[in-house]
Length: 91
Image (tube, rainbow, N blue to C red; front, side, top):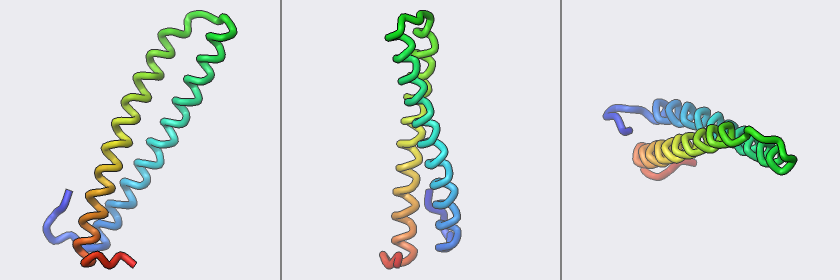
């Protein structure tokens, strides 16, 4: 993730972009979790034919969690790069 010659401003712009992606992925994870809860309520009410939708939503959650994990790693790398550029002085 580190490029030679990147400035603090470049790293901060990249960090902002990762923050935006992470926020969107977290919001999507919440939406999927709520959808799964809704499907579970339908199942408790005896409404059938929810298995396929549940599998789809759970698969989407797994993908979302992998994306969040990757973005968190990207953020950690950017934070490390930022610390190196500022000699640890990020205040």
